[in-house]
Image 1 (cartoon, rainbow, N blue to C red):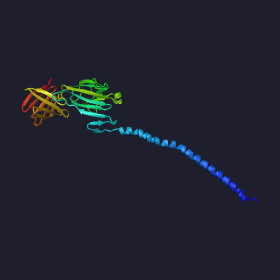
Image 2: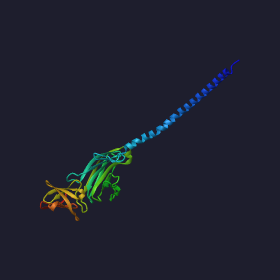
Image 3: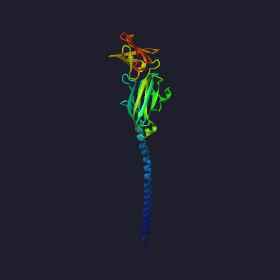
Image 4: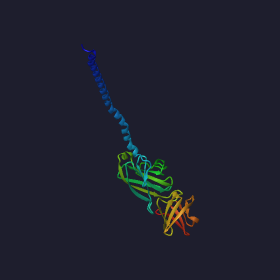
Amino acid sequence: MMNKTNLLKPAALIAFSALFLFASCGASSEETANNSAAPANEAAAESPSESAATNAPANENAASGTNTNGVTKNEQGDEIRTERVSFAKGASSAAVKGTVKGYDVIDYIVNAQKGQTMSVSLKSSSRFAYFNIRSGKDGFAAEMDVDPKPMDVTNWKGALPKSGDFYIRVYLVRAEARRDGKADFTLNIAVTGGGSNESAALPGMVTYSCSENLEIYATLKNGGERIEVEVGDTLLRLNRTRTGGGSTYADKGEKNTFWINGDDARLSFRGEDYTCKIKGS
């Protein structure tokens, strides 16, 4: 007769095997599900990094007021070059050459007096090059109290509304700047005439023809508060002492004086008086 214990052993073995197979299948299904979800989770984790990498160049290109070798860069990294224009001895005009590319600009600085006439013309290899004129570094062309306004032009002439530095900005129109265009140009600048109750000295120097066949050269300094006058081999540095009906400049003790009104001038030098006039006026 078969023992009951022996009959139970095969049944238990079969039940255990079935349970093992069920557990193995369940684990395999769970592992497969987890592996399928992984790429989606990895892609989601990479997206922020890709966005940050895309934005990085824009942040790196943003400059803030860097100044090297006289060239300033604005917040977008575009160059703003400045050059002061001085006229040759005895001249009332000058021609400067330059190149602008993309969004870069050049500011040409000219010092002149209220009432003087400024003429500016631009000749360029590109029809997209223009200039504006501003009265002062932080001024706007639209604020110039003149008609026509010196805005987006290639030629302009007008009487100056104030004394000081004038900024002539050469640039490319926006559409051409976006294309990273380039323009070679020549800018002609002239300042003529005397101001209203202001000295008539021009940017750089002005030549005066005086009595006794004397020729002298005068240059305004510090916005008209001081003047330098070349008389032969002597350089007079004179300070303004009086205004009204012209401007008078003198050294200490008023041993030497220089008076200007419009195109006319009068020099007292080493005890001698000379009447003068702007050469060619």
